[in-house]
Structures are given as C-alpha cells and as structure tokens.
Length: 462
Ligand SMILES: Cc1cc2nc3c(=O)[nH]c(=O)nc-3n(C[C@H](O)[C@H](O)[C@H](O)COP(=O)(O)OP(=O)(O)OC[C@H]3O[C@@H](n4cnc5c(N)ncnc54)[C@H](O)[C@@H]3O)c2cc1C
Image 1 (cartoon, helix red, strand yellow):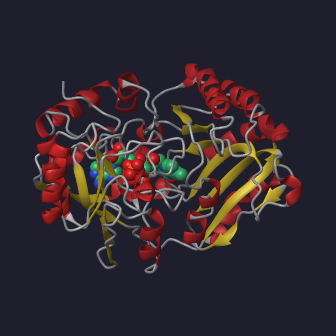
Image 2 (cartoon, helix red, strand yellow):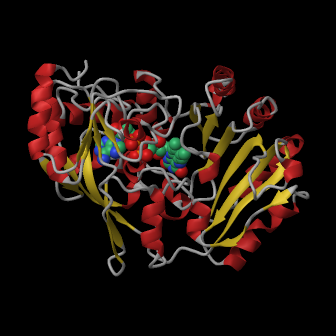
C-alpha cells in the first residue's frame, strides 16, 4: 500500500494536529529518516511520523488505525532484522524524543524513547553513575531495554530491565498508561518482552555505587591459541567476581587505529574485559589471564566508563550489511570449544565477528519468574555475526554464520530475544520458554487483540 489520493487528504489533516515532522517520499530528508542501522535493510515507508512527544504518538496511532497503514515503531533503529522500518506503512519514529533527567539522590533516570546509550551514559556519568546498557553507544535505549538488556554492568547490577522502575506507554488504542510494580503490574512484568505497545518514556535505576573509571578493553591472542585459551578462560571466569564482565571474541583483527598495522586482518581470539570496581582489584582479577601466555595486544587499561562504552562504535558503523545467529549455552564445554575453533578458523570477512558473552552474576540471582526474560541460568550467550561492508559477499557470510550456529545446535538452551533475526514463532517461543510465552500471549490478547503492533519479534494474540 502507498499513500493514495484518498489518504493524502488524511495526511493533510494529520499535519494540522501533529507537532513533529512528517516525512513523505520525495521530501529531502526522506532517505535519511527511512534508513536504519543495518544496511541490508532497504524499505520505503509511505510516511514517517517523527514524534515530539506523547501527543504525537497518540495522533500517529489514531492515523494508522483510520488509514489501516501497517505500523513500524522506531527507537534507535538498531533492530538487526530491521523491524523499525516497513514498506508502504507508517513509521512512528521516536528518535526526536531525547529527554533525560537524572535524579542523583534517588539514583534514577527518566529516559525518553529516542535516547541512545551514548546519550544516557553521558548524562548518568556526569554524576558518576551508570545503568546496564548496550556496548555500542549508538544503539537505542528503548529497543534494547524491551528485550532485556545485557552489557558490561549486567553481572554486577543485573539486566537493564531489572533496573526498570516504571514505564509510560501508549497502547494500541492510543491510551497513555503507566506500568510499574504497583500499577498495571501484570503489564509491567511483560515489559521485558517486545513491543506490546508503544513505550514513550521510562524510569530506570542507576548504579547504587559510582561506576568508573573502569579497567577495560580487549586482549588479543592469535586464533591458533584458541583451544588452550578458551579452556583456560572457562576455568578463570568460573571464579570471576561480579565486577568482572567479559566477552570472548573471534574475528580478524580490525584495521582501526588502536590495533597495530601488522596485526590487521590476522585471525585472533580476544577476551574483552570490563572490571567495574577498584582498578587495583581489577588488576588482581586479570593477573592470571595476562599470565596465560603473551598476548599479541593488550588494550585493557583504566579508562572512563563512557570511553569503553563507545570503544566498539567503529566496529559496528551504520550502513554495513549485518546478519547474525544467536543461542545461549549452559556451559563452555570442550565440545562447544571445538565448534568455536573449527568455525572461528573459517572467518573470511574482515568485519565478521563472534561474541561469546559471559552471563551469570546478578542476572542469575533475579528470580526467573520475576520478569518475562528467559534463560537467566545460562552461563553464556553467543552472538555470531556474518557481516560484509556491502551486498558483495553477504550471502557467504550469512551461510558461514548459519553453519557455525547449526554446529552448536546440540548445546543450544535458550536465545536472547534481542539477538534474533526473523526466525519464526518457534524461535520466539524458545526465547521466552513455553510458560512465559503463553503468559505473554494472554497479555497481548488483553492489550493488543488486533495485533496492531506486529512488526517486532511478534507474539500473536491468536
Ligand atoms: C551494534 C549493536 C550493538 C548491540 N549491543 C547490544 C548490547 O550490548 N546489549 C544488548 O542487550 N543488545 C544489544 N544489541 C541488540 C539490541 O538490543 C537490539 O537490536 C535492539 O532492538 C535495538 O534497539 P533500538 O531501539 O536501537 O532499535 P529499533 O530498531 O528502533 O527497535 C527495535 C525493536 O524495538 C521496537 N521499539 C523500539 N522502541 C520502541 C518503543 N519505544 N516502543 C515500542 N517498541 C519499540 C521496534 O519497533 C523494533 O521492533 C545490539 C544491537 C546492535 C545493532
């Protein structure tokens, strides 16, 4: 469907009541605003409603209901499968809503739906505070939080959703509703799953103690050391304090300024660390990792938290072609390591990257039934990216990622919903587990029985 003559009249009407910017095909900023982070997603909406606040959101929803246009909701635009843009429909773009208000004595922050992680970190760090958030600063706070939210601080403080205090949201009926532990509590429980309704603003707890400087950064070894390193790593992190969060990475060393030129393009295995506590305690925690064997590069050093939070921005720029497959594994067994070694050695693209995220710590201590997030007991979550800079070679990278993931199939437990592509109902069910999936379905029936918000990791009301 495109905006036809019949709906042009309605668009003109909308202009009269909409406070933000309405962008249509042919407008000078149309291409900029239809573009999302993943360059492999190329969709052309009929209209983009760049909202300024709640009134615009309500107006846009009413417009979509009246015209029957399909709706995509956009926060930071970083959905891997591109759920925040659609063909021939309405994009409700929350990007312009950038309000952040940190309340240092209360240790909370009020955050609007268009805020990116770098923007929130900057505001909270002005007071020495932080909340668990994404490790690339241009990712959206809203979309990441809706799926759970993992990051450098999750082992110490829990998931991003574990910090949620309350949420203001606009329902599929266009009503503003507040959800918290005491108000619409069932709905609040479900907010750890995706996009049942449009969330306009939320309030999160920030760290009870100050965060930063942190001892953080990657340490590289050649890929041929991977079997021994990963076995050592498994034993080492079994004893890790909650302050320490690590991601084991496999890739070709990136051609970026912090990597010496002679390493560019070499296959490496890295352990990227973030110790969110006293630097000297961090140095002690890292001592045995550093003693494992001489790394080819050690970039782990004291730095401001915001510097670490943006360290990987250049590794995941806007516009490249990104694909990934993901799974949780209960443990890093010898069999899992064998798969990692075999497939890690097959990395071709200079921008393909595997991240094995350490979980546990505070994430595992929250009652599994307390939120819709599933899989708190997993020790690790895999993120297997097959990426290319353009469409050239992208198919081969996708195949490589699928093959790596399939080889891990005997070890899959759950999957983190924010690490799903468009993989069908079974995978979404796996992400939430059968019991929580049914509970979420019931919530969907109660709040969005027509499946108005369906461009997401969708749980159908039917
Ligand atoms: C480079 C990169 C780094 C990442 N790093 C991490 C990480 O460190 N930790 C982690 O947990 N995840 C991470 N992710 C995954 C990330 O959590 C998801 O991609 C997330 O969906 C991105 O949110 P967004 O707001 O940027 O995206 P969008 O594409 O805008 O939104 C994603 C989904 O959420 C919906 N949505 C967004 N805002 C709202 C709203 N206000 N109301 C209702 N629905 C909404 C959209 O409709 C869409 O379905 C990363 C992703 C990328 C691309």
